[in-house]
Image (tube, rainbow, N blue to C red; front, side, top):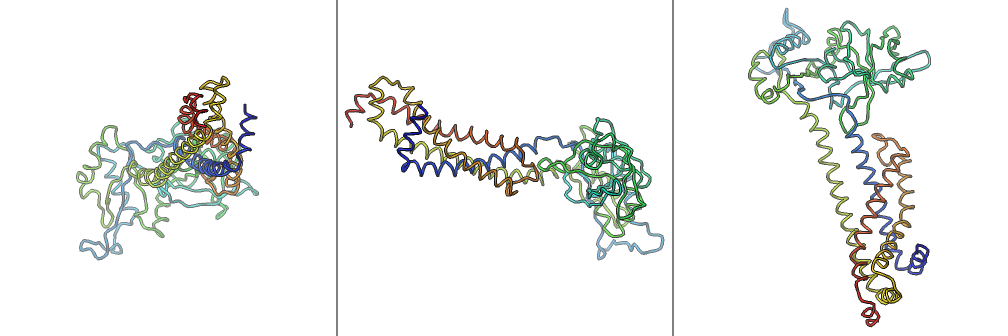
Length: 419
């Protein structure tokens, strides 16, 4: 039967050429769309490596020099910005709902900033790594654990210890066990070396991002003072984990309850932002502005193609009434007529699939499609191929079913009489 169907397709090649062109364009579109949605879905469902439940970020601001209550920071005996920060932090720690608190620079989840340093493992191997400065309690605030699931520890004194993510440890040392206890040297200062204290699991900046390796270094008083000499103190992140059950009233009550205790000279806490809100600002925005519109476009195209296939095969079955009548008079049943019509549509789809798939592969190889969040792998192409096959097959079968059923329901005598 398949051979006969392909012979019939070739015989009607002039009429089939436009339908094949339409199916090839739609199939290519489906390859691109299913690939796009699979990349987003895979990234979204992967473990993040951190927990933001009951966590908040405090935003810092400084009083403007033109304000009436501005205090001259150059006056004799004035505390440094870091001392002002520490004074506020100690008061926040005493708030009953606060379970843990950490300071960090470009480190909280959903933070897109950061800085890079060149780390040297030996005399021949140097690698640029994203670095994040954090106080030791940072890992407890966001429930970040070692690769074995144990709590992380980091000494607070000096830059003597670092914590690497699993992918960076494997990149630099080949495996995690060899990395722990090894020494890293910063190429900017060959005398500034650190020991790898622990290795975390894989970490993301947010759900729709790929895993991004990082090197965590202790944020000390010396480091804070060095940072504030060239940057504003307001760029320091204060991260909180509050006690379970306190989230219902924390955002509304924290600043009014603390009052003036959140201000020290010119530095003050201006707002409280939940990590869930930060997540929505990044992940929610991508879902609303990228994923959802593309999904609606895909659904619109699928409905349009379904109607096109329905109309094309409705016309075909009308034109073949005499052929169908003869086949039914020779003993062909309704199911055979329906099956032959559906198989013809599937064969047309099979002919349109290879060119569309080759163009899709070329776009992946040329990095036209997103290979940053998900590499060009055999598994990725197989998933896109299977998804496209499933969708196009459903469209073909769904669009042809009614015309084929209607054609098979016509009495053969009536079909022949019409001719």
